Length: 465
Image 1 (tube, one colour):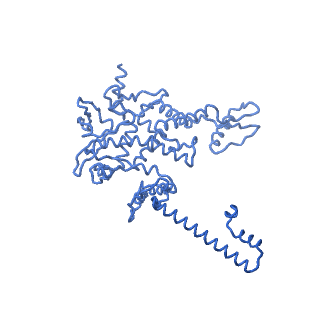
Image 2 (cartoon, helix red, strand yellow):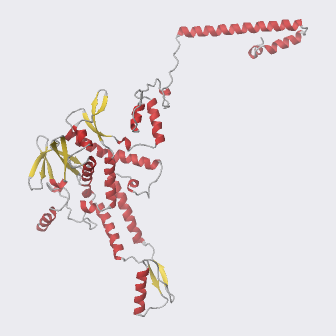
Image 3 (cartoon, rainbow, N blue to C red):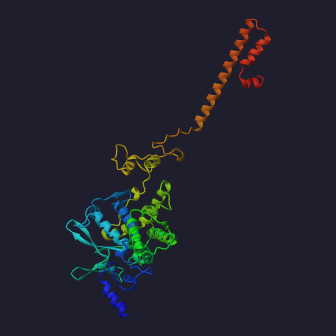
């Protein structure tokens, strides 16, 4: 216990992780992993795969400016003049721009499991000043349900701040309900294995113990000077070629053995394991060996990243910002992920046409999605009259003809019967005139009957009319 206490005292000051309130939060950074590597925030950030995962979340987060919306019975209305909107979109504090503030806070939340910012009242409204996770102790849960934090200042004093009122606290996905847990400590052994593989590879190439091949001779090489000359010549030449071989010498290349293959597989496995831990599709951090690199497969994986990995983080940020910056019940902070979910242009415009035809969006709303200015008359919504008429043509569906009532139907039937009788009467008169003309010309009666039968409609001939 004396040795452990001494180590804690020695390593407590420079460590970068969360300060411990009790044993639940003690990160044990000075203890090596089972692979023999010390896993801390400083060492873990040297692993390229972890850097890529963190940078992916940060880049995605920075592309989504927060919107402050007021919800009313008539719908949502963006409130750009709200103090929270001004703070998050223009200037969170006097020395940082919004992207700098959000990138720093997301970095701390991803790695340390916690991100803190002190809320201050500035001359132009509220301000958020980031705090290093090592500065903040707590929270202590009070009997009233409030949370109390202790912040260590650079001068040595400690200030007490109340949660949500004076301090913004963003916890990671892993939390005990009060404080987030570091992903580095949760994946301690996986990161230790990855760091050990990187360290092994670096030492292997630095020491040069990997031989490209061996030289063989038909007999023993007894001359020490000749042996030394050949060895030195091979060392100099092997970096840019191979030396000239004489006296029956032969060069045998040493290919990849089982240990080399296992080393490469270990490194590949570490990449996939870290990507799995963050919920990142491997192709989004450059690993396309086991996934398609083109088409709908990549698009579907990207949508899965937004849905199952990014949106949970955005929900955490939305709720944390609202708790600290918004007092009204009808005002909420939202991140629009539509830009990240956009398909190709042909697919987007097909969806727009369907949405306009079905009355889901107005033309101006679709123009806004494409960063276009509204046009006159573009705020009108189409009202489909029947499901089968909303075909996604992009234009208003045609109106169906009115259904006739019973009187109109009877009148139409009478009109059709009258037309049929008139047509039959005209046809009989024409046949009678044909008989008279044939008789006047002296046509025999038998031929007249054949001529009349040919002139009758097919239906009458079949009935023997």
